[in-house]
Image 1 (cartoon, rainbow, N blue to C red):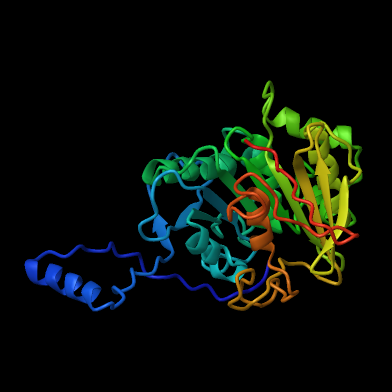
Image 2: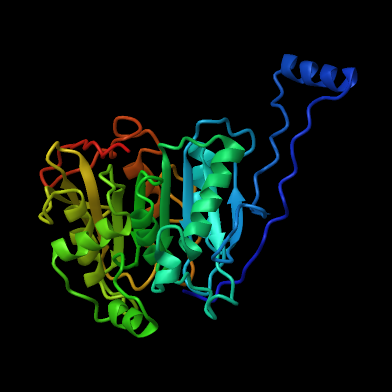
Amino acid sequence: MYPHAARLHSPRKPRSRPASLAALLITVIASFLGLAPAPAHAASLEEVTGFGSNPGNLQMFRYVPDGLPAGRPLVVALHGCTQSAAGYDDETGWTKWADTHGFALLLPQQKAVNNANSCFNWFQTSDTSRGQGEALSIKQMTDRMKADFGSDAARVYVTGLSAGGAMTSVMAAAYPDVFAGAAVVAGLPYDCARSVLEAFSCMSPGSDLSPQQWGDKVRAAHPGYGGPWPAMSVWHGSSDTKVAPMNMTEIVEQWTNVHGTDATADVSDTVQGYPHNVYRDGSGRAVVESYSITGMPHGQPVDPGSAATQCGIAGQHFPDKDICASQRIGEFWGLSGSGGGPGTLPEQTGPAGSPAPMPVAPH
């Protein structure tokens, strides 16, 4: 939801192999002398067309590390209002983690013809129902990525900021059979609004429903589906005046209910000084987590720098808060393999200072 200058990368060029004996000899000699081979061409954001019927009339962009093998995870990242795919990839750090941990990145993009502010239409039933509109377009893009790169169908995840966060709730509810995990940043619960007027009311002051009522909305999105449900990470700034912080509480209530647990945290600690709660199901799996970023306005927190856990480019709606949301989200999903490998949370330090690895629900 910020006026960020869009910049599109030029399409990726495929790498070429040595096509002659001379080229091969150069490669062998360089290896013998201990010289590092020329680095692979850096991946770049590229647009893809022809991904299905596209009833939502969206654009598809992707970032795929060169040489990515089949069987790797796929992350779908949804921008906020007035943003674009190009204004959301590096800024959030998702491209860094795609390169570092080896996964494909899909970035759907809204068109101004669909929404004057380039917001995903998370409040229109025709765009949020399974098999319809923008939700189906994003599902079709996901299918195209799996077909093109052999992405692991059991490790597909979705995240987004603001309107993209609200659309993340939509995708997790409408397509729980597609997504193993979701992360809503400064977003809204699923089916919080069905009109523009309701959307503004839902954003602020917010809608206060019971966990059961929220959970029923998700279950109604895909009737008859019995699980497993996506593991949910929820992020919100405590000083957000655009989307009221109470929406974090409502999202937690919605997804803990869907997972069959209560909204009382099983673990409450701090990460980088920020309140962090973890909610486990009956088998002890971490199915929902939440981060309240103290003093942060509307946006997604980043931590620019070159350290292993740093990411992002600070800017409007990407405040430098010394914590990288995308890095922590990726760990919650098991993308980095830390904290016990894929499918587990990273080690968190509890109030007493003792590590507490927590398994996350598999898909």
